[in-house]
Length: 246
Image 1 (cartoon, helix red, strand yellow):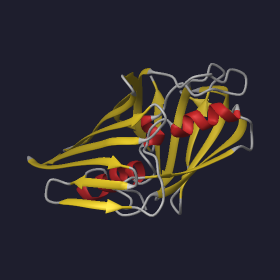
Image 2 (cartoon, rainbow, N blue to C red):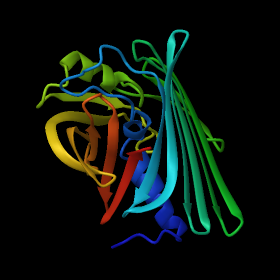
Image 3 (tube, rainbow, N blue to C red):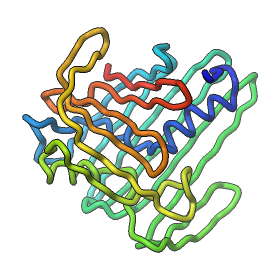
């Protein structure tokens, strides 16, 4: 089944399910991860721009950034998608301490179709395992039964610590309200190894990292010799979503 990009429900499936529910951090953190030969010694900061394709058709762009602000990391993603008369914009801002303790999570999405606008804004603040969640329509306080991190820099640091050795698997629980409001979800990151990959018509030797979230589809990220992510791929419901570095 191919998704209809002019159908608002299918837009939500691509943008909400594939991106958010497969952990948006895997796109927010399309940063200059290290490869086997040039593993970084520190979490990179900067801004990166990507093209968004579905089944080979360009439908949008994403800008991701990571910076240090005082005692915190702030990771931001802005994404715009235009599929005919349906337009969708998303923004997420993750704030965490330099030792990866959650501080604040802000998400915003806006969908416009036939002149009708649907906006969703969610904010979560954290104190230990306690989450204060504000969806605009309601406010909820939740205490989880296990510690967690956000969609920030935790996995990057663990990969650095492991030296990006093939076969390495990093596990961690992440709080992501679009997946589960009450419980953190388990994320696994595996260093698969070097592969020949086509990117923009060229064949490149890249390091393959595989990400997965519990029972959902994997996300595949491919990194070059300089440690820069060249491509990220999500395959779901017979659709192939790609982010390609500009």
